[in-house]
Every structure is written in C-alpha cells, then in structure tokens.
Length: 196
Image (cartoon, rainbow, N blue to C red):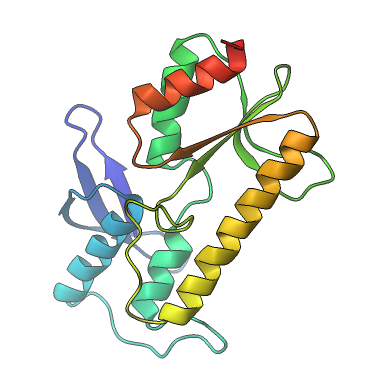
C-alpha cells in the first residue's frame, strides 16, 4: 500500500503496489481523508479488498496479526518520515534550526530520537497516538486486545525509561503527540533548543 500526498491540494491518494518479475506496477484505489497514516493505510486496504484485488491467505507462521490485512497495515507503518514529523521538520527548518533525523542521542543506548539537536542536547520524539497510548485518542483494539494492551504498555515503559536515561545524561527531552498542532509543537521545540 502506498499513500501519495498531492502537493497543491494536500489530498491523499491510496495506491496498491506489488512486485511482478522485477517490476512494481501500481493501481490507483481512491482518495483517503483520515487524520493518521495508519487509518489511511487501513482505508486503502479496505478499498483494495472491495475492488477484489486481494485474496485471503493464512497469516504467516508465528505472526501475531489477526489477519493478513492487519499484518500488512502494521508492516507498512513507518518508523521515520511520518507526516507529523515532516511537518514539524519543515517548520523548524524555516526557523533556521538544523538537526539530525532518526539518530541515537546516546551512542550506547539502542533508542533513536526523531530529531536531535546535538549542541543544546535536545532530543525530540513524535509519538503516534496508537503506538504510545495517547490518553486522548487511544482506542482499545477489539482483536488481540491483550497483545496490544501489553505492547502499548511496554512502549510507554520504554518511553519513560528513555526519558529518564536521556535526562540523567544531560539531555532535554521533548515529546510531541502526532495529533498536536504543528505550530505549537514547533514552538515547544524552538523554546527548548534556544533555551527560552
């Protein structure tokens, strides 16, 4: 599944892409209009099913996904360059700030921040509402509920530990939810970087 944002209208189009003997043909599915990437991907898969472009296959052996479409959506989620990250980076760049993307603040710690400002030692994380358990927007999964509850709680514990380790090492941590207003989020980052 591929999502493309039309630059002039900011509309999002969903395309199905597959591998065929070294080629990657695509098929336009339709326009999607949800707030999150995950919801848009899910809508794209739904359109592909409705158009009869997909067939049901059993989940891969050992997979925790409840269906092939769920597995495909989860595999398509990006770990970097999400739309909220790109918006934030654009606003910060316009303000003259330069940063590293998807880098480790502490070399010995296997955790990456979405943005790093090395000199002022500021690490920025843009957290997805589902994956990090947003108190405002998290909707409990109906399928595999116990697995997802455990997964999200584990992410929250890891986030808190990451924040503590970075602060102990002298870093300022800024956490931003994907639903936050980009201008307000950028203002928080600028304040932390410039020490305001």
